[in-house]
Image (cartoon, rainbow, N blue to C red):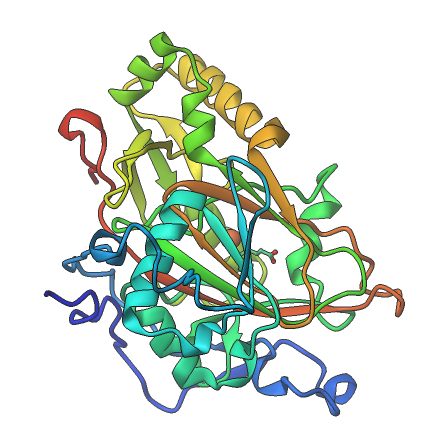
Length: 369
Ligand SMILES: O=C(O)CCC(=O)C(=O)O
Ligand SMILES: [Fe+2]
């Protein structure tokens, strides 16, 4: 069996004693249990372009009956479908205790259900090394080109919005809504498979996350539109993200790229087709005239964003960990809480993202760059 983790997708050019800037006010967090995961920026360590690696989806070797992950012998297990098309919630199972067969089945469950929500987890308390080791089972870990991260752990992307750091909420200044459906860093050549998001501090209400099923979004389209899209690629760009980081005075640790991915993507473990465009990173449809590309992308983005009948919105609880498959879903943070209102409070989390295959399109259509 070949391993998904043998090739390092990321390699530091300079891993010297890095210059570190703190993106939080240490004073207001002095009694906080998770200070070591608060946002920092290593402003020195730069990375070359990601290198190709061999990828084998763990879901391919999974037992399709889920007999290990969802064992009928586990009396405390409760697995519930959150909606018919997308989302499963699991209670009574610790991610930190899963064996390899269970992890393989989890990869398949993610490919089938898009997002799996694990409640009451000890995952946030097992330490950065074990968290990374768990995530790395599914593929090499992605290092975000611009985001803040946990100290000494560039693979642990930080998610934080509080009175001492509103950088991630800035979007609302020029927009009517914070909703921004995207698939994580879809501009990469071998794009993310599974993302694992753990919240460490949850507002009492608000700060939910929503996901849309891109398999259902695809399935709802008429046959003529499906056929048209199956023959096309779209450009995904990391440039706007890098430019906005530079404007915000942040360090860009890997130079931005643009990649052309098939618009309809086939998941290697299920064979299911999914739309692979998203408002967050997709800029144009290759080979179309500007007005055609704009009109078609507008149609698809509206379809993904307003399709509440193929979306799921999840409320975070203490101990919740969310996992999703970026190849068949789009997601958005919901920034509806006021960080200056102590009743609403701050929101803090950590994200681990594993990279997967170069997208596989219909009739052999492949990504290009
Ligand atoms: O904060 C959230 O709810 C989601 C943020 C996000 O897009 C991510 O973690 O990839
Ligand atoms: Fe995301």
